[in-house]
Length: 390
Image (cartoon, rainbow, N blue to C red):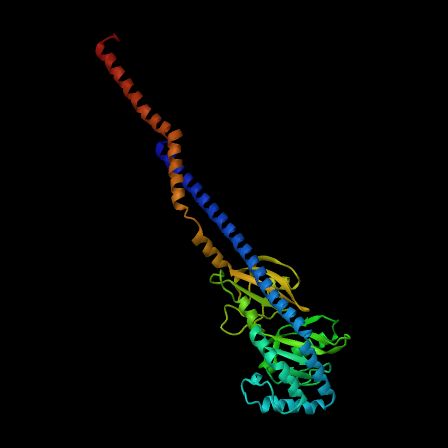
């Protein structure tokens, strides 16, 4: 083989080998980075799940505290006595007239502590309202309710259209608050009921959740129900935290109806209870599974999705964290260490090694043939001129 062919073939073979090494290293780094992103998504899912669960756990603990508060129990007993001695529909009209229609704080009805109408109701209201409105303000709840065993809404902080209504027979009998009241009243002593998120009419159809517990007297008899209206803003804040989420990462919640319980990062409109998410990750999470993998998301994009489930009262929510696959690929390429310098050095070293162990022998052999021919020619010429051949 001529030296030129040898070096051409050797150089090409080494170049192909280096290309294969580069491809293998790039593929290995992408796989390694993808696993790292998957681990991060699983961690994000658990962190979001933990934060939301802790929020509900705190609300439950505070509800249990207030349901045993002596002032609340005394007020509930007083309200029961007031309703027992009156026509409920008439009394409802009277308290709404005093605390809604004639309220001097229109636009902020909660500011009125005492309507000063001389009624027993106002005496009870003035005792608990300052404390209740302070609790709502300081702890971030939307509203607090005291409800009678027959469904009469004795008291609320906000005085919306549910104030004075009846949750068994009235306009809001099919609302989330009505379900929470009925479940809590029917539950065993000490049990807490949390409703799923759904639009609530008295609050301008905004998404709302309720947590409720029965109020019981010293003998254990149910006196009614205390309920909190939970603000969804806190849940949205937890799920909208974007630190470490890159350009396409997001975390969100989905209910059993396949509707979002938080907002989409990619929508300028409210996604809560409007955006349907019927993906493999959500389906598996709602079935109680946890995992991570590539799927097509609700936007039609290929994403890496980590998912798990969260029990919310008697409902189940899917907790999902996702990154677009293209961002993972782009990020892996951008963060991958440069291989060109190292591969060029290895390529050069390989060529040198090849020359050292084989190439110089080939070059030497080619050079050696020429020298021998020249020597033979010189010897022949020398013999002829001496005349020794004769």
